[in-house]
Image 1: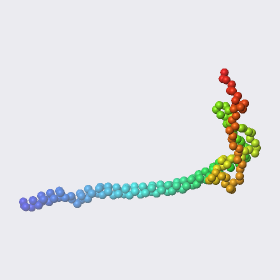
Image 2: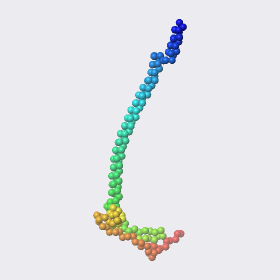
Image 3: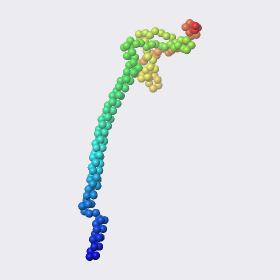
Image 4: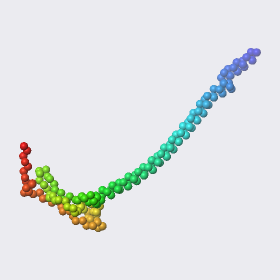
Length: 175
């Protein structure tokens, strides 16, 4: 009987080392469920992330299209501003408002003398000089052949005269 006791002792020791069929399956079930839940949540997260990226892509393409439209509108408005600020257009609008060119200017120097001759503006006014209209000038500075020839404005002459009564009158002394 002694021989039979030993195998039982061995069986008990081996049974203690190896998990039993029912107890091992029960211990694996929470681990398998944890892995399945982690994989499922990872797939759902990936799907949501992909949807968000697609939505962002659609919004980006809409914004790019709107940017192109606004750029075109801005360029059209800039062309309108350039057309209105051209020297010829400014002159036409000023004449419609009843404005006339001021003629040749006179300058008041720091010492109280006047340089240049003033004259009253007439309804015909002085013509614009070619330097005021750069679009009519060619590469060499000559008037383009398609533009009608304009008479040159009289140059501002240095007409400072020390004998002029306005230039030589002493200023009153401060009190």
